[in-house]
Length: 112
Image 1 (cartoon, rainbow, N blue to C red):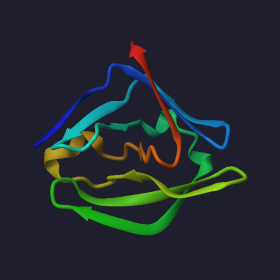
Image 2 (image 1 turned 120 degrees about the vertical axis):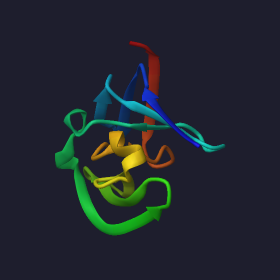
Image 3 (image 1 turned 90 degrees about the horizontal axis):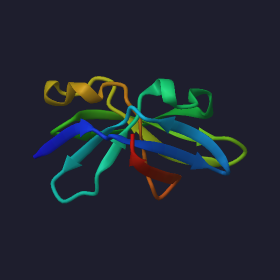
Image 4 (image 1 turned 90 degrees about the vertical axis):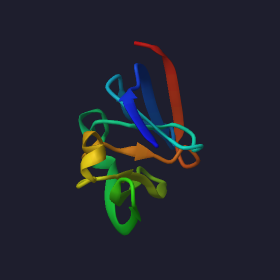
């Protein structure tokens, strides 16, 4: 079962010492026993640091994910994903971005 709700926290993403994203408008997705994932609006992400790759994956619950690498002197390949045309049941995450926490520094801070 997938649960999506406003995160009600501030989410900051740093890579190679640079702040890549800073959002108070993230959504929190809980899916089964997986750790929660934060999806951030593109307006809160330095999109100029992301390069779309040819990598894709498919989830039967969310649809096809597209991937981006972060580039700023170093590269984190396929560190970011997005459901640009998600299934109707998770439409709310359309075009939001999520980051692999093992490739970036993800800071979640207090209630907003």
